[in-house]
Amino acid sequence: MPYKEREIEKQYYTIGEVAAQFDVAPSLIRFWETEFEQLKPKKNKKGNRQYTPKDIETLRTVYHLVKERGYTIQGAKEVLKNKSVQTKDKIEIIESLEKVKAFLQGIKSQLNTKG
Image (cartoon, rainbow, N blue to C red; front, side, top):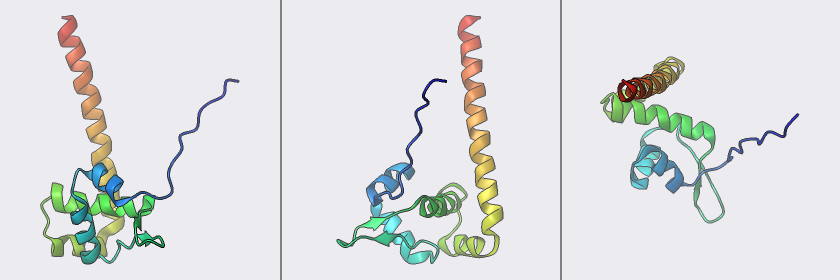
């Protein structure tokens, strides 16, 4: 059986890496930390923030609500408090549908070039 390379998942991410994932400024991530009590990244001895995959999931939810759905900060807080599980499920469904859409558009463009 051939050796299969395992994908290495980091345990902690810097604020710069997280900001790059969401294509936002690090200052916005810091602002959201002050507004949303669910966002509490660990800090190392130097005071640098260290985000776990769970923190990034929470940020993904906040980003979706505020940037993609147009919620106010207060509205996003309410949704996170009341329906966090449902919101995460909806975000996962949307992301999976976007992947399917991109895949189908790729197939369509390949068929158009062959025809």
